[in-house]
Length: 71
Image (cartoon, rainbow, N blue to C red):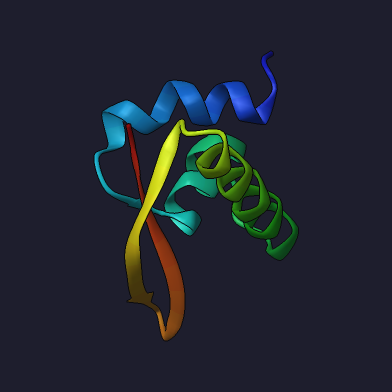
């Protein structure tokens, strides 16, 4: 089983524009506060490295979430 970063890099191109919550569910298979926060940190790191880009924010279930897209 690969690391979460590897999973994010694998799934991101096929997902188009996605939210942090959507990627957390896809990468971990379940949603928890810990998984969402961990995914958010990894997405920010990958954005700094130039693999993905934050394209805006979306309000999802009353919560503001960043939306992302693979480069």
